[in-house]
Length: 270
Image (cartoon, rainbow, N blue to C red):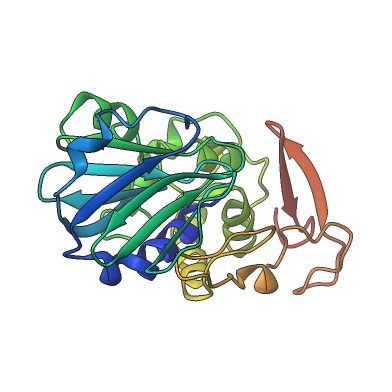
């Protein structure tokens, strides 16, 4: 699943190219997770102001309303002036005067949703319960600590829930917990202030590094300009079960938490 770094890399890869473009056509393929929310013809003639992000959602701001884009489990965007004809898994084309933005999503868990504003009911439904943005100044340590103190679940599951801090995802939760030297099974409420502070810093460090590396390409992720990510080459624990820890040499372990794979070093993470 594309996580926050992959979504941010995607945003950066086409925001400048699509800004000020005017929509000339919209092509809808097979139904996605949620309907568009308006007749496709209503988007014609609107112009793109910019592209923002909230958690794992891209916010395509138009001169009238917004398009909320989620990549789901397997989605990716491509933006170019000369895309080939749509294939079987290409389910949305936004044709503009500067190029076509195409959503490819084999599993169709992604979505493109039109809303009038971020205050609209649908926008509130999708975005209203998201936690703090970990790459922004809004990621406040005191608030992070206070919210963790009320959570009895293991810290890895709290990070994945997304209502304390948004967009961390499975890969980067494992990596941040390793950097903070915290075992993933530790209950969130049991973390001391010092450990919470380490984790707060680690989340920002890991996500920022992942964005710099273009995200992670484990299967077929690529940015909107076709570039693969390389963070997976730098992973300390993720997908390294049985291999020696890069810090201490102890074999990395994999366990299942809430049906998700968790990777950790039993020596470095206590």
